[in-house]
Amino acid sequence: QVQLVESGGGSVQAGDSLRLSCAASGSIFSINYMGWYRQAPGKQRELVAGITSGGSTNYADSVKGRFTISRDNAKNTVYLQMNSLKPEDTAVYFCNVPISTGHVIVPYWGQGTQVTVFS
Image (cartoon, rainbow, N blue to C red; front, side, top):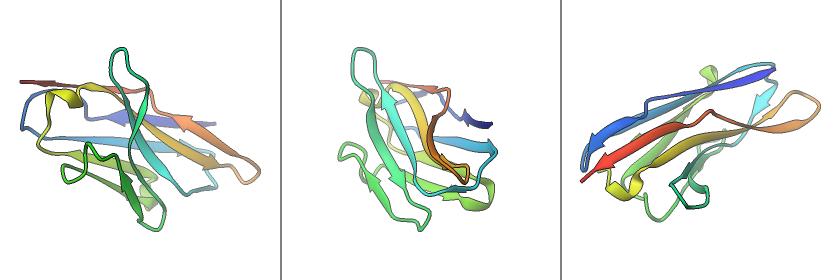
């Protein structure tokens, strides 16, 4: 059994910062990629940022230079530091972590955390 627990969402003013966390626990053999997605009302879920176990990162063009993804491999935790937030960043943010149990790799999703940015 694997569980992802997200934290750190909230309501802020444009220009403010937030830091999201997503901790994986349970029967984990290994984790390579960890990612953050978001879904705004009426829109499809989109990739925000991802990071490999080696530290390679990728970002959506809309967040480059403002968001930073990082991870603590010892804690099986991924973070998303969001700076200079804009109203268009308003969405529910989900972490996505494909986890190997030693036999199969299963993509797990966090429960989602709401981020609301007021202009």
